[in-house]
Image (cartoon, rainbow, N blue to C red; front, top):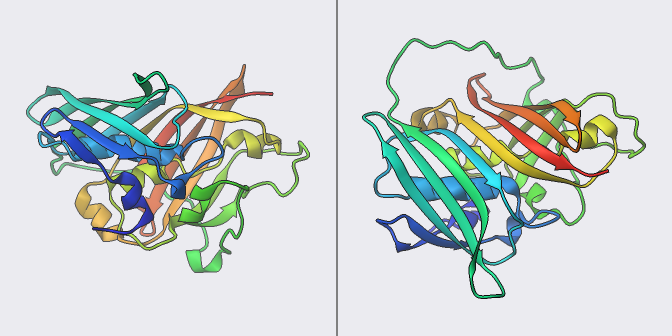
Length: 276
């Protein structure tokens, strides 16, 4: 059994495998300021799909909605293939935790699409930005206090690192950085899901003000198959994230992840609540 922190966080037991019922527990290794790191939660939701015996193909899209705070401790998952076609499969996933009243309380919902990919014409209209190689970029040495998950990643910010002064002087929301697991681990779909959420909130950079935030929903699109992820192995990914609109208590941010070879692996969009 793998002892990598991510694999421990993704560990699931099944109470009824055929019915897609799993149990797991939050990991202190991926703790955030409040509850667990949202990227790991999304990865766990996908893991329930990947572990289901009726799985068809590989992930194409995953949307995770954070309905309530997740408490430290055990949780239950239910993954259901609601529609299976010849080459695509549609899923719903729910996470719940037992409350003080002894009843299950829903915390997180997700939908996913998996598919059997086939060889076709392909092109990209979103080229990887020109950046220095990872070895030429200094590694981020410190992150926010009491945020354990930051330590699980090796981050090398090129532009848009965490503000050094919270003085309201921010003028853009773009971050570009090299990133990979701090403890070496081959890239797979679950890890790519978590990495898609590894950027700190764009409003902190845009305003240089650490306002309270909470991700409401994140969608990740997968542009790679398992063979391509295997080629990446334990290499770096170039991540880019930028905010798009900040208004009335919510903002959205878009992110992209490329391999060192310049192949676009995943894109994501999320909507985030913020409080003045």
